[in-house]
Structures are given as C-alpha cells and as structure tokens.
Image (cartoon, rainbow, N blue to C red; front, side):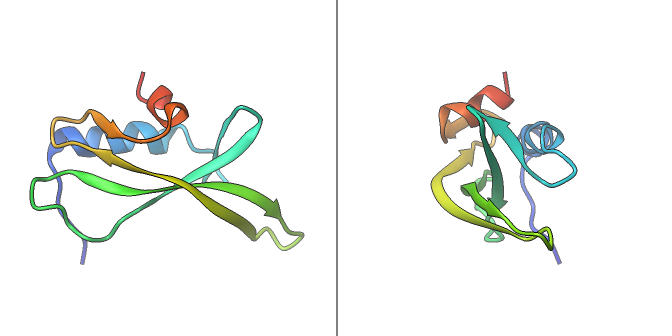
Length: 91
C-alpha cells in the first residue's frame, strides 16, 4: 500500500528523482546525496522526507550515509524546506 499526495507535489518529487543516478544518488558540491521519502501521509497532500549524504561506499555496493537535513514539498509543488542543493534540482 502506498500514500497519496497532490499531483503538483508528485511532479516535483519525480523531477528530483529523475536527477538521481542509477545508484540512487545525485551529486552536488563533490558529494553524493539521496533522499528518503517519509511513508507517513501528509494530510494536506505534501511530500516530506530526509536528505542524506553518502559517507562511504563498500565493495559490495552498499553505502553508509548521514542525515544532513529534511525536505518538504508543499501541495503546490514548491520546496518549502530543504537544502539549497535540493532546491537546485527543481530549478
């Protein structure tokens, strides 16, 4: 089972995810990042989650990461909370 959000928030999330590589990461400032979308449904149709920075990649392909912030895509599709580099993915 999934969760719901507004069409605008979904489009913004898709735009961010399209910038991720096949490894599931995007690069900014020489560092790899990825987002972890919260599974809890926002009553207003927003999308929320965490931004993590990859700290190590192992031989088996697994990664270690540290949380560097949180994000919120409002129901209108605008990023109201999140690091600058994440905002740049929506520009």
